[in-house]
Amino acid sequence: MFTQVKSTKVYEQIIDQFKAMIADGTLKKGDKLPSERELVSQLGVSRSAIREALSALQMIGFVESRHGEGNFIKENFEESLIDPFLLIFMLNGSDKEQIFELRRVIEVETAALAAKKITDKEIEELKECLNKLNEVEDEEEKVKYDKRFHYNIAKASKNILILNMLNAVSSLMDSFISEARGKILMVEENRSILMRQHEEILEGLVKKDSEVASKAMSEHLDLIYEYNIKK
Image 1 (tube, helix red, strand yellow):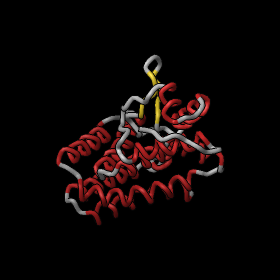
Image 2: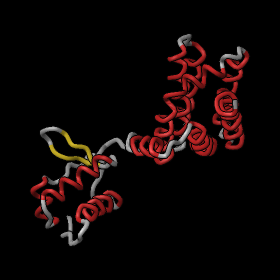
Image 3: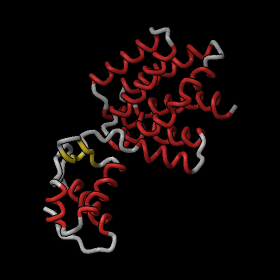
């Protein structure tokens, strides 16, 4: 299963083997890993090197440790990008304009892609999100359904990398999403504009028209930029 490691950077070579086996399907989501003792034997390295590699794999989101059970390949990778993104963001002193720019790059094209692949069931889920967004009075609830609407569009793209990336970006934006909506809604007429923009995005998706969907998404993000970044 594994090959013996001969390198000065032992733990990095161990990590490379794990990544390769995940990539070629030898190791799959949810698989239990051999015990530390078995890995020591198969890889021909020290237990400390194994522990160092496993610790690094846990940090980057490939592996999870379950108390009393052992180590497993993670079944859900949706959170795997979040911590590295947060770390990069904090270390480089990035601001919310950079997050917004990344969100624009992702979401406009994602809307176009989703329009080509969206199912009837996914369309119904988006309609339900908009119904709730329109019906609920509590602003925190509105934020929840607003986020869910965008997240469901990413799901409809059928691209797991896009979904994970948007999830990571959204986690960075959580701290000021409520603030963003608040600034926009200080102008009363913007309430109906926001709702109409979401409806236009949905209309493009229902028609399976990539151009309409991406244009509507771009206009929606323009409004967010105008009130939260530009001003």
